[in-house]
Length: 255
Image (cartoon, rainbow, N blue to C red; front, side, top):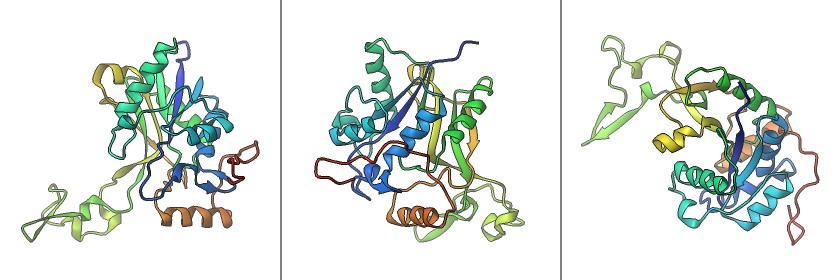
């Protein structure tokens, strides 16, 4: 089988509210956006690495580290409630107008900086080896088990998961005795582009799990996450993808 044409999307909208400009916030000497770009490029999996951003500033950073930015996303598909399918569908359509069609797309979010090129290669092998799959999504074992979660209705608590056994409710069981449950993380997704065209979805219905290891799936979305990432680096407990070029510097001399 001929190798499919594969594109990596690095989504980096500029309107983050929890941490302003988190996608270009420095970590380990470079804007965090740099690490997803370099991991994608160095993996050798992708025919193109494209930053999907609504910001000229972010586009400048992305190009510095080796990504393409052929066009900017509009504000209409870059809000904090905009679903991924909107910008993925638009990006694929705009690229198609340029004569650039792809069989597979990947989404590598900048807030997962510890994802390595080796991580991407491992995921790619799992994806192409999974016959009949629509997509692959990164997951990790959940730390807060849904078997111990509740909803509140009229001042009464009801288990979120109603299938808990009566003889030994999950909410009163040790974590080790509970069924394994996985939660998706933001580090990596791969999917055939046909799922966008046929079902207007980025995942389809047959999803292959990709279990991340160590800090591959760590998502830096809040201040505590950044503190943790910096401590991991300081103590040599995690590593960032290697970045060979000098750090990006803005027009005011800041990185």
